[in-house]
Image 1 (cartoon, rainbow, N blue to C red):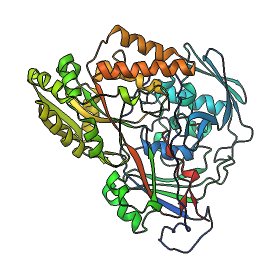
Image 2: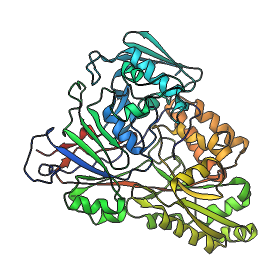
Image 3: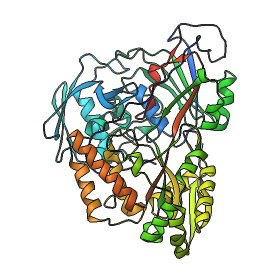
Image 4: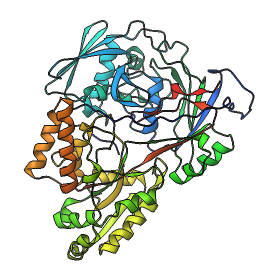
Length: 521
C-alpha cells in the first residue's frame, strides 16, 4: 500500500546483508549456453506485476515501477548498493542549510538525456514541479517544497519547516528527472492537465543507462541500452526483459533456464533452491493488521493484539521472515527494540474477546503477494489464533482493486495489508498517526493520548540524528500500545538467479539496480 506524506525527517538504516553468486555466463534469450560478451546479451526477469501500470516517474507507484524507472531515469541523489543509510550524488551534489530548510543542488557537468541534449536546471525544476502538481499519489511528498532555478546548473529547494527527510525523498524514483522539451511536446505539464503518461509508457525521456523499448503491462516490459548514457554505471546486459509471471511458476522457469531472475520466490521455494542461485536479504516491508478503531474500541483492540501469536505467524510465513517490532522496520534508526515488540498473551486476550461479542470480518488480498508470501495462509492462521482466544472471525478474501478502495475509504473492519515505504526515512511512518490520513480516515482513529501526539510532533521536527532516533523509538512504542495498526511480520526478499548472474544487491528504494547486474566473466 502506498501513501500520502505529512512532513519531515531523514533516515538511518543499519547495514543489510549483501549476497551475490557468480558462475559462467548467462544464457541468451534463446536459452543457448554459448557465451557472449557482457553488454551484448539479454536477461529475462520473471516478476508478479502487482500494481505495475506505468513507468512515468510522476505517476508510478509500484515496486516494479521503481525498479524500471531507476534505470530509465536519473534522480539528483541515489544510493550506493545496499547501503540505505545515506544518499550519494547522482545527477547533482547537495548542500543543506543548518536549519534543514534550504537544499541546494548543483548539477554534474556534461550529463545528457537519451536524446543527447544536456540535463539542465530547467529540466530539474520542471520534473520536480510536475511531480508536485500533477495530483498523483507522489505529489504530497513535495507539497510544501518551493523549487527554483538559481542558475543554469543550480536548483534550490526551500521548506517552511525542517525537512531532514527531503534527501531520501529526492532519491526516490518518482522524483526522477525527465527531459522537459520531450515531455512538454507530448502533453506534459507541471499541473493537473498533464497528459504525458501514455507517451512516456511508449518511449522514455531520461538520462539513465537504459531506454524503454516496450511497455505492455499485461505481459512484459523491455529495456534496451541508452547509447548516449554517460553516467558512472556501465550496464552488463544490452537488453532487459521484465516478464509477467505468476509467483508459483517462477522457480520452475528459472531452473529450466527460461529466465535468469525470479523476483518473487516464497520462503519455501527459496529453501529448496540451489544456494548458488539464491539471493536473500531482510526487507523493510511490513505486513500488518489494520483495524477499525470505532468497531473494536480500546478493550477489543487490546484483546486482539494479545490474541495474535506473533512467533507462530513468523513460523507460518517461513525462512527469513521476522516479527515486526513496530510499524517502523528494524533496519531504521528509531525502530523499536525486540523487547518492546507486541506480545502474545492468550490468557489476557480471552476475557476481552468474550466481552467483545461481535463478529470480525477479516479481509485480505486474494490476488497479490509480498515477496512471495501469500496472504491466504497468513489470514487462515490469524483466524485460528483469534478464534482460540474467543473472537468470532469471518474470512473475506478480496481482490486488490476492491481491497485498496475499501482500505482507503475506511470501510474495513480488520484486514491484513502490507506497507513498502515510498522513501527511505522513518518520517513516512507518521502517516499511521491519528492526526494523519491513515489513522483518521482509514482506521477511524481521530485522537490519541497527549503523549502520543507529542511523540509525533517531536519525531517530525527533529533533525539531529540521535534526537530523531529517540523520538521515533518513542513513537513506535506508543503506537504498539495505542494504534489500531498492528505490526506482524517483516518479510525477507528471496530472488532466484542463474548462477551466472552477478551484482544483485537489495535496496528498498528500487529493490535491485538493474544496471548493476552483470554476467560472470
